[in-house]
Image (tube, rainbow over all chains, first blue to last red; front, side):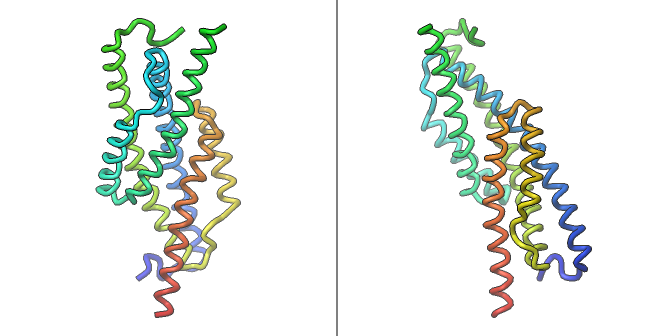
Length: 110
Length: 110
């Protein structure tokens, strides 16, 4: 049975706007948490570049994927989506790390 | 100047582990917030399917992109990344909405 069986079109529209307001609140939280995550990975990038550690770390990534898949399962989020999400973020982070490492090398060579 | 100019390799490794612990905490928060976001979009999907509203809404998406880009800017997050992130999430959500709409049609036809 539908969760919304008896709404008028106008009520349905109002319900949609209410849900969208909550989604917007959640997106605002996500943006701020992601900003904080990139602050941390920026520090990781500097540390790795200074101490010549490789930008990516497959073992660490495998642990992250395993942990987040399990956590997604218990939060009723599709584990495949959680894994895709982590890959999406990590791809961006590795690009940042490479840029930081390149900056350090360029500085050394100037 | 580097943020980490004088660490021993062992200290650098410890600092990396500390940063990773914070990143893991943030990822746990992200997974739970995303789970909540998908609960809300699941409700949106049901509402849209019940009242025959289209699964995607380009005008709403344009508003979301504009708002999140501005918010990203003020949070020192790359606005292009914020936009890519929203597209990534919305693509998943629209797939869910289409699946919900299909389920409703299949139920009607059975």
